[in-house]
Every structure is written in structure tokens, then in C-alpha cells.
Length: 501
Image (cartoon, rainbow, N blue to C red; front, side, top):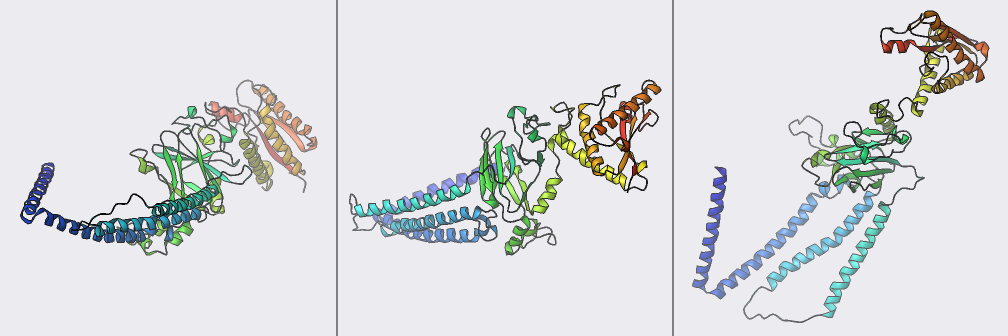
């Protein structure tokens, strides 16, 4: 019904236009063609002058009205070190193009008024004017040379890459339909390599090459955290179509191109809280964030920097928004230390792990700290001999007292601890599950304990500080009815038996 109504209205509008045309023709015949043309010309010229004034006033007034929200003035001054240079470049360009814009429109509409058709006026023809042509050529050329030179200066200051020896925080942003996947390097400060052939939506969305150990501590983040006044290099790429990495508050905009990584280097200079404080000084930000909750937080309190995609990459384009938090170095360190490696959380010891069954550096270091912590905790107990420390990384060949190569890390840690605490004596005890003959298990547990003692003696620990005991299957730590339980029962333990104060 509404469609029929719309068609009817359009039809009636056409009829009105046709009838107006007929009335105009009839009027021209009655009044005379020349009189009508003169009246129309004068009327058009005057209305065009009115339009010129209204149009220019509207352009200037709207630019002034929206300068704080759309043109980067007021509360939205650049929040990066290079942003001021880009804003200055835009201001200079706006100054010259603004002058040309206003003067050409005034001339355009003034000429339509001044040189409108009038009786007795004859146009003068001249083929050329060297002076005028020189002015129109030289002046724009000089302005263009200045603008281009100024732009090149800013470009060379903003776009260079970082020096390999320079201290910089690098992270990676990968665009896809319809999200940004953010990857940070771990404590090693280096991003691992990727291979698009390894991309798997289930467990490897970025195609990280797990044989590259730099990938081991890399982690994925939902939001972007950046420390203030720290130079940042963002590595930008895409998986499917063209995207655009756009941080408007930092004056950063760079295409994300499948198969062609790009980058941008910038330094954030205002924390999120500092930017909010700047916004709080402006009336337009001193209003409720939610109009339906007048007592709720104000608009400036809910502000966040944001990452957007500035390409129309599909119907879900809007959902690529990501929050960017600029914080102090202390806050950044706290957030950074709370993150978990993607490899550790999703790949470690699975069939995709190329290092399955090996001890990696991060595990060795973590175990070293853990063992020292357990030892020192036992040391301060009233009865340290009651505390057994499970040496989880001491391994033997099946049915044998021969130490595996992987055991050296745990035993080296014990050696370092005993050298640091030279007044402490310890007991090393061996335990087995209940599989097989009990007497054979007892002998095996004693031999394994002695193997650990021999290793420590060879590392310079006095044998008078060491005691080996085998308990066989007599002291199970778990049930022997399951595979996991029996594995837990096959263990080597350490306890403090004396300390010479």
C-alpha cells in the first residue's frame, strides 16, 4: 500500500512539473520572449548570490561547530608524538585550500551576477593574456611546491622504520573478516615467524610456526595495551581482504594487505586517563554517557581510545572495533606479566607440539624458581624433616636406575641450592608403584636414590651431607589402581634432615 502511495506521489509531482512548464511557455508568449528571459536571468543571478552567501557561511560555521569532534581541535588534539606534525600539515593545507575554496566560489557566483545577460551588453573576446596566465601558473605552482615539500618533510619524519638496536615495543595486528587479532611478543621481546599455510581456525588462527622458539612465549590479546611515552612498532597484515589499521587519536592509518606486511611506528604521549581529563573540560563531554541514565557516568568518563578498520571490508566491518588502553609503565608491566602464552595454553604437549617430551627453557627456569621456593619454605618450618619435596623432573629409564638426560636440569638446581645453603643436609628417597615384586621394587627405589646422590657428589656436594633411602612401594602418594596414580607413586623426593646454624 505504501509503495503504491509513493508511486502516486511521484506521478503527481511529474504532472505538476509538466504543468509549470506549460504555464511558463504560455507566459512567455503573452509577455514576450525577451522580457521573460531578462526577468529569469536577473532572478537567477540574485538568488545565486544569496546562495553563495548562505553556502559559504554554512561551510565556515559548520566547520567551526564540528572542529572539536571531527577536525582534531580542542579535546581531540593528537595523542602521539608525531600527531602534531600531521595536524600542522593539515592546517597548512587547509589554510591555502580554504582561501582558494572561498575566493573561487565568490568569483564563480559574482561573475554569474555581474555578467548576467543585459540589453546592449556585448562580450569582449581576447585570445590570451600573458600576464594573467603567468600569475595563474606561477602562484599555484609555488603553493604546490611548498605543500609538497612540507608534506615530504613530515613524511620522512613520521614514516621511517626503527633502528635494529633501538628499544621499541613491537606487536602485531592481523585483520580478517571481521576482527583484529592482536599478538604480542613474550618476555623475549621478539615475535615468532608465521606461515599462512599453517593457519587453522581451531588452534592456530595466525599460522604461527611452532618450530620457531620465538613463538613459544607470544600471547594473543583482546585489547591493545601500550605504555605511555614508549616507542611502538605495530606490524600490520591481513588474512583475507584489504583492511585498514586506523587509530584516529594517534593520527595513525595504514592499510593491512594480505601477503604484504606493513608497519607504523608511533609513540603515545597521553594515557587514557589523561585524555579523559582533557575531555572533561568541554561541555559537550559533560553529559550522561547513557541518556536514559542521567545519574550514570558522564561521557568523558567512558571514553576509550579505539582501533577501527577504515576500509569497507564487508557487512560486518563495524564489528572490528578494538579498545586501546594507554597506561603507565607500571600498569603495563602488571598487565603484561598476567598474560599467558598461546603456545603454552593451546599447543604444549599436544600432537601439534614439535617439542613434545622435551623440557623447554621457560619450563626449566620456572621449575628452578619453584624448587628454590619449596626448599626455602621447608627450611623455615619448625620440623623441616616432615616436609617432602617432590623432584618432579627427575626421570629414569623403565625398570632401571639410569638417569635420563632430562634429569640434569632438576639435579643441577638441587646442586646450586645445596651450594648456597652449605649448612643443610638432605635425604633423597626413592619410591615405586606396586607393580611387580615388592622386594625388587625396594631395591630399585634404593638404587635410584643412590643414583641421585652420586650425581650430586660428582657436582661437589659432600657425601656427609647426603643420605639415600629406598622405600619401594610402601609409601604411595596416590592410588595404584589407575595409570595416573601409579605414575605419581614412581617418584624421587627430597627432605631436609639437619641444618648447622
